Image (tube, rainbow, N blue to C red; front, side, top):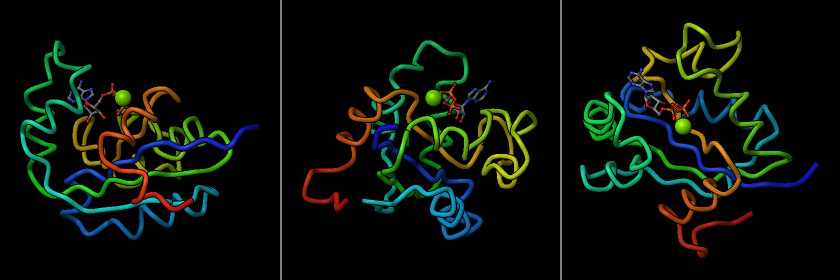
Length: 140
Ligand code: ADP
Ligand code: MG
């Protein structure tokens, strides 16, 4: 077991429904620590840059429009195996396939408006945390 950090984003469908606290409770109940957090409105350019790995996918344009449709809360999380652990807490991309008790099962509206983002690997976690946070903003 190793202590890792991962990037989480509470997406606009969730901030719109005032679910930040309920999602944070699930994160903390899972033993993950929120070591940085800020709420912001992404620009189109920022959302396109963040999701650049998906730019060839059919849903890219819609995904970017969705991610800029309202504020997001970006967070750095820390804990044992935080990357995989948070993916478990989030649940499957499509909420119809997400396990009972996961964030997406409880809160997601659709495969697109699925309430949260979590890094998919340790390497991407470092890149994604650095996209949003400087060292001075992270207090582990
Ligand atoms: P995850 O967020 O579970 O890592 P992906 O990285 O595959 O999933 O996709 C990134 C995001 O793109 C998803 O969280 C979701 O918001 C959106 N998305 C994924 N697949 C689809 C789809 N088939 N239609 C619309 N949006 C999608
Ligand atoms: Mg992903």
